[in-house]
Each structure stands twice: as structure tokens, then as C-alpha cells.
Image (cartoon, rainbow, N blue to C red; front, side, top):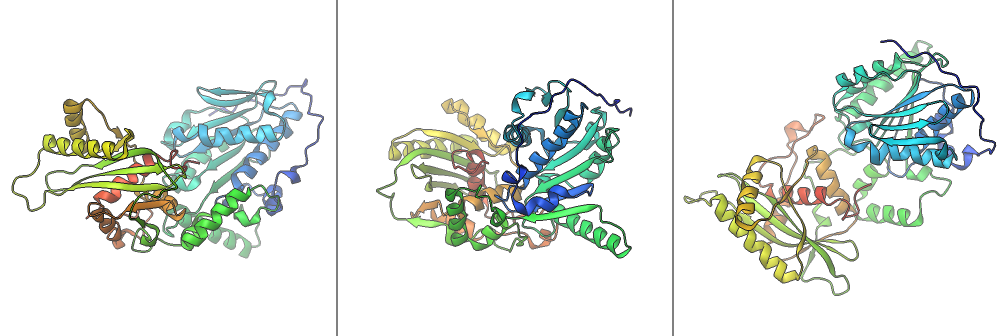
Length: 461
């Protein structure tokens, strides 16, 4: 691949206003900011501002070459293209604004690019759904690469295959292409990113033993490293609430500790029973979520409510198991049952559902088609992610102390199945642990609901 020749523009005029980086970067990150190593790994808990620091670093790197009149390009990567705009694209825009350079750039959304008007220096944004497809991308004059949410990539092979594509397009006016990784460590010690980091540590130690300089700079940060007071008091109060409700979850989410999975998936003390709806917190929306089974698998549907205070309440549960039944219900029978269940709850809570969520499995489409044929209403089929990620969203809601259930006879199956919901021990020492696929129907229903309504539950960040 031929790298584009360097481009120099002599009419550039640097900004006259000086901005103190120390007012934007917490002291903890000084060593990371100044390191001359080519590979920088920033791991740690949420609220540590590692991604903000990297975005500011990338902008200042580009600014240096812009002021010299060069075209300098930066490649920003996520595991999937659909996440780019709300993450790295917005993060770079934030950094440009902080450094008072926002108006010097054009922001394009198809394809995603942030382009300096005079030098054409560009931030490129790619999803690494298939690293092989990136080989055809000619960028040229690359000075840096950033893997954001690196733990969400499929494997370390994504890094190994992607790095050469852009490193060989190094700008001729830099000594090396700097590569940054930022991520929150997964709970599972056997997740690929945790094992990858173990390998990096071994390499660093080996080089030190040989009298060589390590190639990787590794930084671990938490919200406790925020000495500039960037985290609001509201954020700190929320962190303390999670720490009180679920210390292990707090240690993973905010301290970046690899806490392991344990056998039971959920901490059942975080499922709070209610005899009735609270008098000081009213429902603002109700939702339905369904997991439909086959001839030998149960069908479950739950009605959830979100309250004015942001709490989530399990209101009602429908559950049908065909096990040991000679005459099993057909899709038309199940559609009638679900419609009756829905109408009963609409009447009970005096509101129509805000959304109906369902699995994307074939069985759910069969029931959905029957439901639409009979009642003219469609369910929204959830774009599922890895099971570990879906469970993490539920655990986040639970750890905030915001999940309740009406303690009724029909909801007992929901609680019982969650009590029995466990990891498969044979898969726990792998980077893709599985749950035991028995008595998991209401657990799936809960996960679909949370995944499909993260914004309404204030879980989308």
C-alpha cells in the first residue's frame, strides 16, 4: 500500500490563546500524557476520565502538526460501526471544544469524519466488525490509532490484524504511530482482554530483565483519581449508593477490579418486594417483554413499569410451560393468552404500553406474526449482544437499588427462576462464559426489557 506524501500548508495560523492542559487533565494521567512509549493502555473504572484524557491527547497531537502546516490523521476504532457516533465521534468533538478548536473543523456523518478545514487533517472513525475489510482503507499520514472500549472487541486478533493496516501508513514527519487502548476491565479473569493484558505485562517484564525499555505503558485509573472535581456530587452520591447496595459490583464498575463471575448470576438481595405500589411514586410508563418457547420450552411475558422517581417495578407475569402436557398450546393460543394478559394490565394500570420487546429468535417471530395477524400489533425484536453484556445491564440496574417487584403469586416464578439462574461452571474459565439454559425464561425476558429500554431506565451512557 502506498502512503500519501506529507502535505504541508504554510498559511496556518495557530490559536493565540493558551490553554492550560493541567486544568483539563487530572494529575494521575501526567505520566501517561508524557510517556514516549508507542503503545498506551488505559484501563480502569467508570468516571476516571481515561477516554476524555486520550481524546484530549489525540487532539493536542494533531494540533502540534497542524500548527507546523502538516496534514496529520488519527484513526478511532470501535468494535462495531453503530457505536461510533455516540462514543468516539462525540468524544473527539468534546475535546476539540475544550481546546477551542471546534470551529476549525467540519463534522461529517456519512462517512464519519472530522476534518480540519485548512490542512485537511482528519479524524477517521471505523467499526472493526471485520478487520480484513479495513485493509482497503487508505488514510495516509497516520500519527495515532485509538481503540475505545477495547474489551468489547472480539479478540486480540482484532488488534493484531488492524494495527499493521494503519501503522504502515505512518506520517513521514513522526517517529512512530502511537496506539491507544481504553477500556473497563471485564469481571471474568478469562476474558480475552484480561488475558491479553497479562501477556503484555509478561512482555514488559521480559524486556526489563534484558535491559530493554518496555514498549507498553499501562495505566489504571478510577474515579478516586479525580482531583479536579470533574465528577459531580450527584455522580459521587450515585457511586456511594451502588457501593452500599452491591460492593462487588462497585469494585468492578468503578474501581476496575476483575472480581470474577461467581456461580449465581444475580444478587437476590437486590430484588426488592412490594406489597403494593408506593403512594409517593407513580407509574409513568408500562412495558411488555416476552420470551416465547417451542413445543418443549416455556413462554414467559412480563409487564414492567417505570416510575416518576426512575425506579423499575415488575408488575405482572404470564408463564406457560408445555412440559408434561399432552395437548400443547399452538401459537394462536399463546397469542390469545398474551393479548388477554396485556389487556388486563392496560386496564389495571390505566395506560397503554410504551414498548413491547421480544427476542429475535425464530420462535418469537412466529408468535409475533400470529399476534399481528390476530390483533394488528407488532413486537420490537431486540438486537441481542453477548450474554455477559446483557446481564451486565441488568446488574447495573439492580446495583443502583432501583428494581422492585410486586410480591404476588404470578410473580413468584420470576423470582424463583432468577434465584436458580447460574453460570455454567464448565464455561467460566473462558472468554465467553455461558449460563445454564434451564429455567431461564423470565431471566431472558428481563434482559430483553432492560436492553431494549436502557435510555428510559437511564442506563445508556
